[in-house]
Image (cartoon, rainbow, N blue to C red; front, side):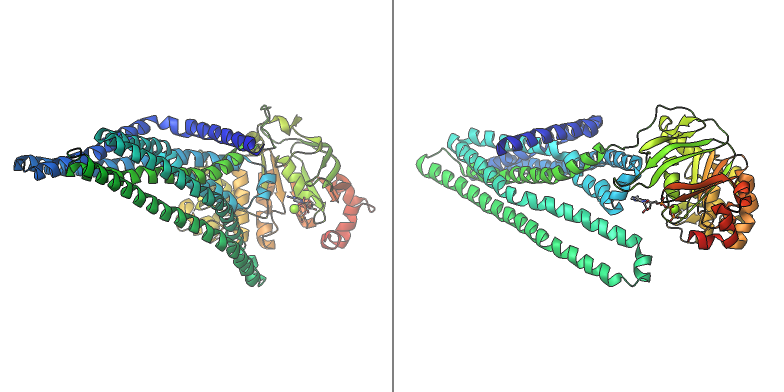
Length: 592
Ligand SMILES: Nc1ncnc2c1ncn2[C@@H]1O[C@H](COP(=O)(O)OP(=O)(O)OP(=O)(O)O)[C@@H](O)[C@H]1O
Ligand SMILES: [Mg+2]
């Protein structure tokens, strides 16, 4: 039963290797061929060299002509230099091959990660994804660049040596064949101890990167709360778990290393014993040169055996990485692209019907929501912390799909639209703005070159950012560092506004978007935002009532349910409405 299972997994992993090789390595077949040729050349050089030495020794011993000796020595030097040249060229080709193939995989992984749902990203730390995209892919570099070639090359070298030894003498060939089979068996057996430990090591490593990434991101909070000691405590705990695994992995490695040295020493001894017996018993069967040749070939055998071992070891390491990489690639986004129903340009109507949604199974986050917003209208969305306002925004962008009911934009169910089309037409400004490493222009256009500078300048001007723009030392080319270094939170928020207005969306969601602006700046951009929103439908999520004064309609949420909705002016005029009570006492008290 157990055996059956192993066979099955083996079958699966061979399929997995084949699939990966075909997908990533086959397109590089020119490089692959070049590498194969170089390898064959290098093998023949390695096999020929000892023959020259043998000729040299025997000629010198038999007091042959000195010119022949010169030629032999010269040839030996030429071949040796050639062999070095071939290995440099082979290293160049195989690095190239490794980089090209792994980079393709890396790019696919990054693209895939970007396409995965928010629900996936919430469950993964960025550190563990980095370990996947870089650590695991690096572990695969060798597998891609040289595994097949080196494995077969070394097998070929080994067979070549054995054939030449058989040619020398049947018994020598036989003894060395037995030695090779025995050596591979022993080394392979020991490898089994080490392999699971390596797997564990890589898993711990991924956890470690995740930990470091998470805490470097949160340095400010950690320090502000005086939690550095606790973080370090967890760090020590983690490293304490890593130490024994590392030690075991290293001991496994040492054990393999010393075993192979012992095994090769035994091989040399065996070769000497056979030669000695043949020397004593069969006069003239062996020359001194031939004994040296046998010794040399036996030494040379160590190389392919070692190489095959390290290749198999790398394969073992690659196995774990490959499985993880494949699992990641096989993780399908739950949010699937629609068939591509078009969304009209200009302001979009928004309609929620029967909408229910929950992040986790038992707790409903949104329940039975109904509302309709006409094109060009502005909705003020109010509600206490945790009432589900941001969730509505996420559903509109299809970061999640509703459990029941539907969301329609301009009468089209958003599940029928292409995601990129939807996200181009619906724009959101939140409190958390990511400033990316790049110029001011890159940060505004998000690397879209087709947006003209003039248009950027216009938007900045309209947002009242002309002064700020003028203060930039290199204009739009001024570099910003990731994390928003050099920008105040308010400035970053203004940039986020500009970003949205450059994309000409049909629906804009402002999620507490002006909360980081000081009252004066907010007041200053007020007019600009009104102008910019004129041709757009807008949902403003706010805690402060002043912010929703521009809204045509109001919707108040409580625990994911609508507790009030209607036209702002009507609600404000109705003394019994929640909204008018909020207005009379001030939002902070009601909503806080
Ligand atoms: N990714 C998530 N996974 C699980 N639960 C979540 C997730 N995001 C939010 N929630 C829960 O859903 C509920 C609604 O959250 P939401 O962010 O929509 O509130 P909000 O009205 O925007 O609050 P705030 O005013 O604080 O921004 C909260 O109870 C929150 O704990
Ligand atoms: Mg929110």
